[in-house]
Image 1 (cartoon, rainbow, N blue to C red):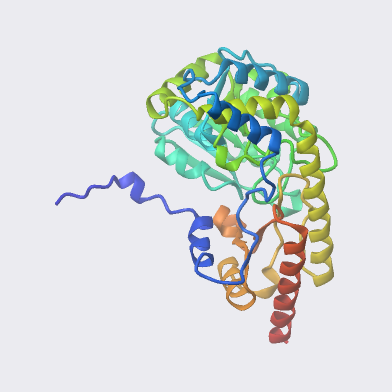
Image 2: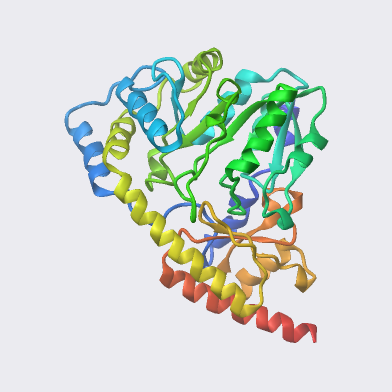
Amino acid sequence: MRNPLSQKIMTIQPSGIRKFFDIVSEMEDVISLGVGEPDFDTPWHIRDEGIYTLEKGKTFYTSNAGLKELRVEIARYLERRFDLHYDPVHEILVTVGGSEGIDVALRAMLDPGDEVLIPEPCYVSYLPCVVLADGVPVTIELKEENQFRLTKEELLAAITDKTKILVMPFPNNPTGGVMRRADLEAIAEVCIEKDIYVLSDEIYSELTYGEDHVSIGSLPGMRERTLTINGFSKSYAMTGWRLGYICGPQVIIEQMTKIHQFAIMCAPTNSQYAAVEALRHGDSDVAQMREAYNQRRRYLMHAFKEMGLPCFEPFGAFYVFPCIKQFGMSSDEFATRLLEEEHVAVVPGNAFGACGEGFLRISYAYSLENLKVAMGRLGRFVEHLREWQK
């Protein structure tokens, strides 16, 4: 028989996160700090709205772009929170999670050979989505000494005459790094000068600590060249509802909607109604969860300091990215031994790009109680490693 698979798909490796946690599912007494999923239930008033729409039989297709009512609320939310201004009719597309927005945007914008700049470490979907869209991924190594921010110099060094899109993954998964206004202004200047589009993944925009998130699309000259991705999974603890959105220039959104129309039809209807409720009345829920995450973040930073494990202080998302280079082992080896010997599951840093080697991603989207037990086990493991090295 002929090979049923395309050569392109065969070159793409499975997610390093999911592959690692296949092992976890077969073990007992494991504390998992690996999956980026809030441990909070979706707030009750949001769930109640989803239940109500089911009871009322609101189970039909919506328009391809999403409920107009929802797109209007998205536009209002983005304006009041991030000074972003979008036409809800022509410039907003409701997607099946933020991940669909990434995929559809790249397929709508790339021709074979177009280069996409991807700062790493980063979310695992960007690179394979570029490949599937026939683009060429070009990675930019973010550095710990720069707090894992993208600098103007790093961007300029990576640009060629084939560069079309820059992915901006901030607040960052897995590092927790953020870009402040001055950082973004320097990047925007380059993008305008070099005529580059920006795909700004802002799914963690509500989860920042110390100062509010700044959206690059709000800067002068960037609205017409930026696609802003966001959603409900992280901020509102709605991962299973599978709902996101992407906003940008009408000429791009129209073509993205065409792909979405043929591949998906529309995002889940009851999720869309629930999302309207989230945007209208969910600010206090987000604030409560953000404060809980911040408490956990501060606890982890203190725990790492106590055990002598270097970790730059993250100011976004709900991850920390401690460095384990002092132990002379790979991230995979460290994470595997920690799992086998102490039953604590974390993600090797190299799952998020080669430059993540020597680090671990630890999620604090888990209860403080579980984090305390896990840090006790991690501290014991680190102490044993140091004794062994003597």
